[in-house]
Length: 389
Image (cartoon, rainbow, N blue to C red):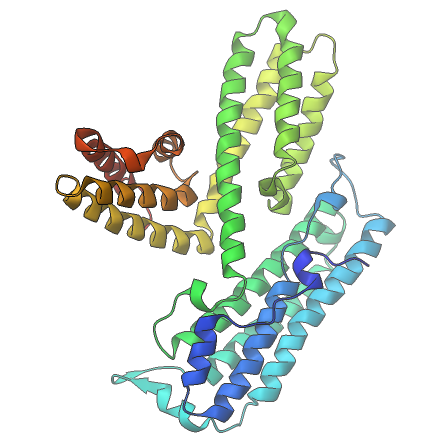
């Protein structure tokens, strides 16, 4: 069986530089060595539990129950998911058995007079959560309401794999945080790739929403003889979206809706005289659904990312504003840097999106005088309107 993802074939086992720094600095070398083994196993598990590519499992049939071929493909994925989580659990049990003495790590139970959990306790708590998840995965795979529908089955497998990745990521972050202030990007293996995937989904679906709104307006104004052409254009637009990284990274149930609606668009596109009312209905449903994908903003990985980017941009713009009159070149450079960073917020708010599209084509580093100050002020105002806290 081929790997479920590229990462599964070459799982990441190396630790981040910050994790290495933490382990190297720990005074208890034996404890650090045991923790290193856990972190290496966690990195491997995160890599192997990366998102499945659902494209090969898709079907435009609405009521498609899992057939034998799907079960033949899914059974190894389910098995490997359980084995990957259990491999990490075995390492934690081996390195941090329940009654072990933690040596100098015990000193971390209290910091500044406030009670604090040590890494070993956090690991055991995480181990309990992961073990419970494995049990729940097994129960879900025996649930008739899950296994009787292809897309529900795929969604559940995908959901559990995402849950395991999140819990393992939390395991690394929370234990590393007991040694000092760190960010997830600094210590969690695969964090950067996960953020990039979520940012990509948000940006591309935002652009698809704009395309669908424009198509909706054109269909409403179309003459009867132009309805089929609009249906064909919509089919081309949806097919283009189906080739994007955003489409590959959609949740299974979201992808199911897209697949079904693409099939309906395809049906209308080949009719010689499709009904304008039918096409308007389909475009409206697609538009509403794609706008609903903005719920991606509530994913924890994006919430944390957006706060960091928002704060970083705010600092740069404050400095750019203070230098706009005295040192325009430096001010313009800071403005350009902030705008480049803020591109990863694209899809968060329509007004900010319009600004970011505009500045992509504008040489911000060449701005000076009133135009520089005005652009900084507009940018600051748009960032202030974002609800990131």
